Length: 136
Length: 380
Image (tube, rainbow over all chains, first blue to last red; front, side, top):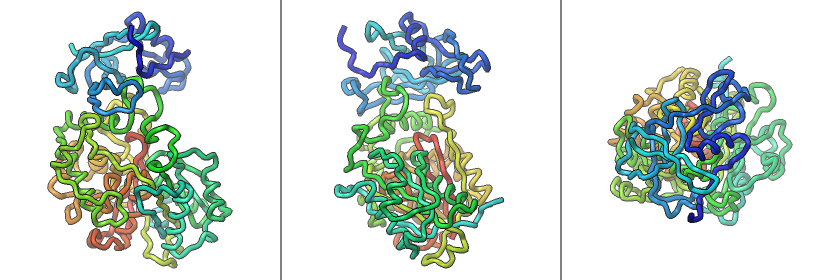
């Protein structure tokens, strides 16, 4: 496997559940068992709704629509220079929260706000599979 | 207990903007403070409150205390505030509250920075790397973040690049009438459209300058103001608001914090957007200014594109905006330049770029990517 040169996510106590599930190709959301608030990536230690620490994991459908997007032509993001132009989306998950994501196998000219997307997983290193998005 | 018209901006001071290779950010603060004191005829001995915005080009624990030493004062009140680019306007409001509370009488508010020639702890433009993991997605830097706002605005309202470009064109026109402005070159719409794309739809010409420089303002009571050198510029109304979440947490990027900050300010001032003769709107990016003009109610949400066309925001138009060039052409420092120009306009000091009979002005300051906001409504 070619070396992955880009910034990898920080896997720690808070985010381990998210990344373990990504390895199994499952997108997860946090849900607060005290107030029901949902939190998409990045995971939090404390519920932003009620400040409870009782944030558990639930399975996300992996479906959403493109809320907005950018086609990056110039970047200082480490490891991304060779990828330009590349897409970055904000996906509005069907469950409600929004999250950042890159695309897999999608042309910039085919993208538009409001288009439906579905998550796919890109096994970029032996440890990390990244959730990415394809058009449906 | 309204503070409407009880306080005034009495002194303003700024450096030229651009590159200051021999000057530290400490120096830039001192130069600006000295200029502001001379502007109102006060001395450092009169100052009992000093508030600073910390520079991006260096970290110093107790920053405002260093500035106090450099200008030889022992104030009652000092401190550093960081709400990013909204700080300057927030400091004016904080100073008014401190004076009202009886803690002090004369407040000097200052920001000096040298991101161009100084040592940058982040290895690039400081605000490229903000918090969180967005770098993981290749989302890095303010232009990329604002492209998300611009794309959504185009999707919801049909806004065009040409309309964004009208803001750059207006700011550049105004900067030509300001000898201190960093950019002294007119820009046509065609040049704007041909400028390189950083993150579609944001072009280099949508992005503010990066500047070394410093600015300071002095606030005191209306009574004291009337005994000083220049005509006081009174604070009629103020407001603040923070939509502090990042772009991926906010469900509606089209509703900026200026809406609520503005409501507060207009209510306190007892005026409406129609009463504003001149506006300084935070323009770190063209899209920022456009969304903000809508948020303040100068036009309906979504109509910002047509509002900025046809010279409406240029000198001589219905609502002159960023009359010294704004961040797009005067300087990119996220500091006092809007407050300083707003004050000078209401004093009638602006010469060729003076808005005729300007009586009431609005000054807008933003922090982060539409995350914090300050609104000031000033009058002569």
